[in-house]
Image (cartoon, rainbow, N blue to C red; front, top):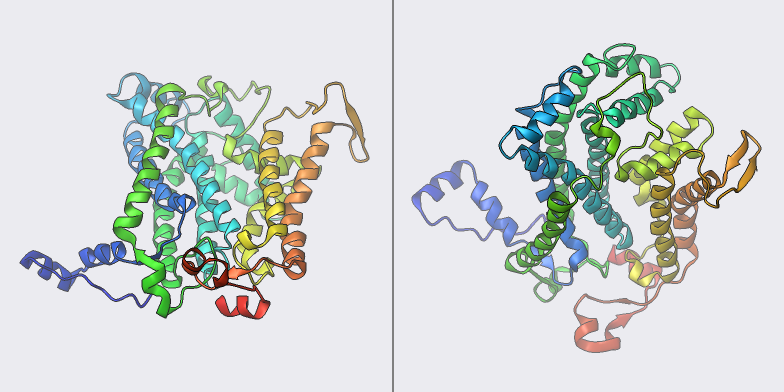
Amino acid sequence: MSDHESTYVPKTGIEKWLDARLPIVRFGADYLSLPTPKNLNYWYTFGGILTVCLMIQIITGIVLAMHYTPNTALAFASVERIMRDVNGGWLIRFIHANGASMFFMAVYIHMLRGLYYGSYKAPREMIWILGCVIFFLMIATAFLGYVLPWGQMSYWGAEVITNLIGAIPLIGEPILIWLRGGPGIDNATLNRFFSLHYLLPFVIFGVVVLHLWALHTSGQNNPVGILIPKDREKKDMVPFHPYYTVKDGFALILFLMLFSLFVFFMPDALGHADNYIPANPLQTPAHIVPEWYMLPFYAILRAIPDKFGGVVAMFGAIGVLFILPWLDTSKVRSMRYRPTMRTFFVVFCLVGLGLGWCGGQLPDSHVIPNMTTFNLIDGDLNSYLWLTRLLTAYYFAFFFIILPLVGLKETPLPIPASISEPVLSGSDAMTAAAPAQAEKKG
């Protein structure tokens, strides 16, 4: 990919002048003509969808920032003013609020696709790591933005999450005071969160550029999970345009239809009703929960009885993604040819959904009504918390135990010699997935 020769030829005098000084048009033309594996399915369209989501969030965020007042006495009223008095303000705010949920839905699908097809394996480790950086920045940006409406859930969510930082030994308290701007959450906190929330999307955009740069350097993965040799490029690859611009465009239209369904018909379905109540430091909500896309990590936090241990587990659940390329010992990329690992992957997806459900439950709720179990640490404990701990154990076991051991023990299915031959030549084009051959293929 990195040695892809440019085919762009400037035609007009302006294009020639610009190309000699800032070849931005050449860059765009070369991107559209970039050779791409011809077997990419619709799971690969979420990269383009995420780019659109980021641009929507940045544009709507800039407009909202023009009317928002980062002051504890005026923030809630300024949001209501945007909704009622600013022309189109209700639409912009609903697009921005629901856009965060759509952004996370797309990024979770994008990451699970990469996990399933082994897109993190050499030589694409840097692509994966930069993607994890983007994911972490998205979580930070979403949390900061959740505080800005200054409703009940905003305030108490900030109170709970920032207090977790104080649990870090030695450095936790100074960081907490710096982040809040004082000993408690007040006007200085809101100003800091607004500034950081405005800044981080542009940082994300910069990391996205690096992510795409790394992608074009290392090359695009494909569902088969094999590298395409030079002598096969003409048979196994097609230009990105028009083949994948049309495919991505169709997937984007479907995605925007789902997006519009929430914006126009269910704008508050993914939010919390308590956030339409002004923040009151003297009245604690019955149930403090983050947005739905943070619930799995919130469940992991609550699964650990020790406060500091919960913080370590929560951040560890994100941090383990950064070292994933070195935890998978299999020489075969795609789980299409790893039936044992594919089963564990399906269970992993169900575990993620289960953790999200557990994170949204009340601390004293039960999976089975009127059922309690005994906890050696805390005494009586509801059954849902035991389920949370079981799911948390599987989450970490998937990365630290299952991936390394299954990769060493399983016998993968035969993998094709190319992405075209299995279709054109039948089963004769299949080759055994011996470790040495798989290693040669990457």
